[in-house]
Picture 1 (tube, rainbow, N blue to C red):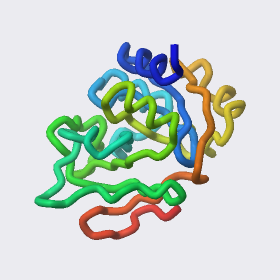
Picture 2 (cartoon, helix red, strand yellow):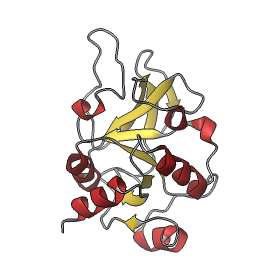
Picture 3 (tube, one colour):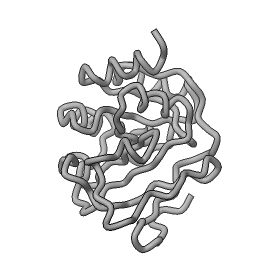
Picture 4 (cartoon, rainbow, N blue to C red):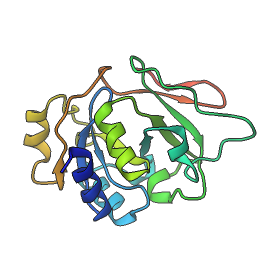
Length: 181
């Protein structure tokens, strides 16, 4: 079984995975599985009011998850400078994913492993950094295993990249940077 297919199977069964993204390892689940979202928040010890990021392999996978006004579109991703965009939330987004925010944070991923998982699901997945809230992010598989091996259902093998560190966060409508790289 291919790695992406195994990850997709775990996610479809309500699981939580750890996987590589552009700059750091992430924790993820299906955004429509509220039980899995709640479990992910407990694992990470993250305040649910903060909301979570969704990643997808293409803008089309965000259909129903985002509600861009008029002719607005997500910019093409830059592999060296990943940007997470705050956009209006679509009707599929539950409060557990959005938190206390009006919008939703989304990113088109350029990491080949993360892309393959989203493509295997034909869906976006939740993406939050693989760390306990307030603690350093896991930058390699051994640190990831030490912290999360007993907490998640599958640690997806692979490398982070091509960037380093968490993505920048910007508001799509204003262009304001909310979190620099």
